Length: 436
Image (cartoon, rainbow, N blue to C red; front, side):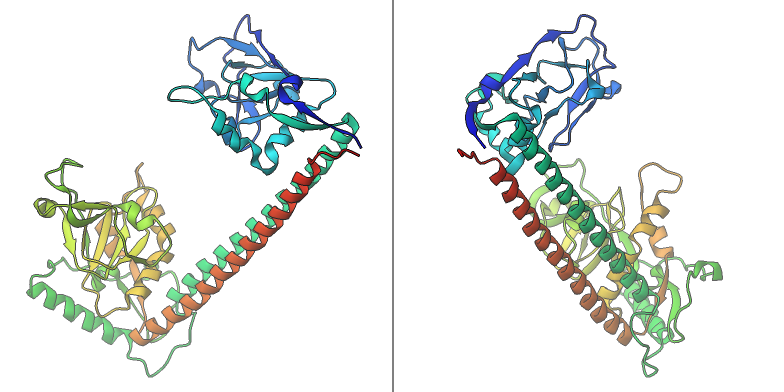
């Protein structure tokens, strides 16, 4: 098996056949992350765009601006005769080199990423054809190229199958995680203890505490919530549990934002100011950091809460995400807070809200474009209240099972990493020049 080292400039010849009658409906683009070449959607075309060139099936093609991001490929037969501008050049390949050989040369071991170092230009940097000319590439015979390309494709198929299987496993783990939460809020996760104080007694104590907070003017008095109707209870609950609404357990309030946004009179001070992105940045129960701050002058335009406050995002595509904030803070109107729940296990209430994320998103999207979860919807949410000791036992069990899910996911990811590394080594070794 004989190998040569060739300069890429000797193997590629740029094709510059101008399109006499450019057709906006026959344009192609090269997708990022080595995802292939495809027809460009007509709505992305601009009338009177730059000069177009005819491209042929089997040519090697890349995007000047995004080659280092994996924007390269081989033009498939169905896109023969389509067009691109000079920013997406294509190349005929010398007869003794298969276009796929060049394609895999760049793809294997992510060699294309290093091309960013040679990009040139002001502002939006590009990789021009002349910059590829001096790149060295191993070149075996055509027959050997076919053997290796076939091997590459089989390995890629194996990688695809592994990733597909891993995705199935991740979905099963996530399904199990959701089932854990569902069982938890229905009283199916741990056994009931007949010696536990019934939920009805707990609820009366919570209501009394809320009334006390109203008298102390720490929370506002709210209008009575309607009793829960039978059709609002989606499942049976244990005998010592009870149905209520979230608004009976807590005063649900919404935040606010000093206006105008970013005004230096109000912002960039010493007081934490939370936005939705702070709550949705990770999957942790507790929030221990913040991104934005305000000054005391902005306090009257927002809401301030103590540490250990349970919160819930209530706006946009990421609404229904709960978090327990571990520091005193203010927060904007994309976040709701639960006040006066010291007689509840906040982590249990957190997991309940976590189980309702999908339901909240669906409920908040009814009859409108941008989803918006108002405090009335949150307060009216039916809630199956367990005895307080059982809440503690449920939280302990949830954490055990979710920890198991996390460890299982990490094992799968580690196995996936090792397998892909082995396959990458096999691919890389296949491209090593063999002088014999």
